[in-house]
Length: 239
Picture 1 (tube, rainbow, N blue to C red):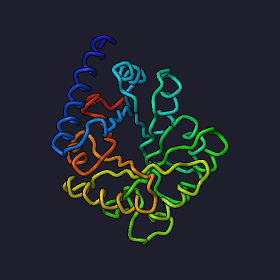
Picture 2: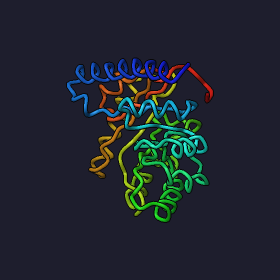
Picture 3: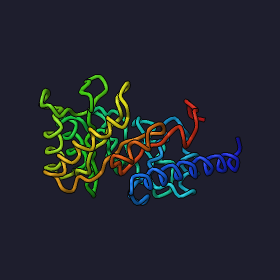
């Protein structure tokens, strides 16, 4: 597919996603401007990111450090880069050099590694969302709210981020667990987010909802929706 045809394809998909967000906001009695679209471009080429930027997309999400670093270096457009995948502590030094937001912080140890790297390698604080495990399953990652694991305790992780000089606590992120009704998952997340804001008033962001469930996420207060397939299609490999 040539560049112009791909641009037209992306423009049509972007228009539909934006209409979905607008309809969801209208149904929830919210301002559509209160929801930020994060285009999840993992496995898609930097040329797609450039086209999306030209179409007005401002926020882009990636989930693998090596791919994300290469794209951030290749794309000249002034975008806000979100790291949304599971992150190992040994990748912290790399991620802080290009990411504006890390949405997947789920342990005090990871918060510490990011804080150390950010203090050394960044001039501005790194925005951080605490990834929440809604069902408590450790296999999928995410901080837990029941205190069963001190390193992954939601409230301890949030406090570690809040107290770190190189980080800024933005809020929470979650994925609806498999087998759960998305509305139930996002309602639970909204409750946890409200509890977090009671102690950390600046933690107002809720990143929730993807291509299949953005409407339910918006209904329950999502400020960011992470959209890949509905925007970019079903491809699995870089072109």
